[in-house]
Amino acid sequence: MNEFLMGGIAIASLIAGLYFFRFWRHTRDPFFIFFALSFWIEGANRVSMVWLATTAEDAPLHYVVRLVAYGLIIAAIVIKNRSSR
Image (cartoon, rainbow, N blue to C red):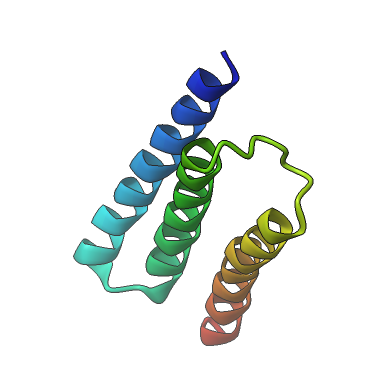
């Protein structure tokens, strides 16, 4: 059951990344590509957790991957706010 839920989260993340990528293609705003990359990284992280059979989400490597993904979101917000001034 846990692998099924991980797969659902992974596919949802990958689809959300495609959604933001579509907006980036229309606007060329870096805000959207940062969000797309962040969701794709999260999706790939979930897929790797299932393939490697490490469903323990408290492993340090998973925190580093999340730090990168969330760092991209924060960078997108900061860049967007600075460019509007």
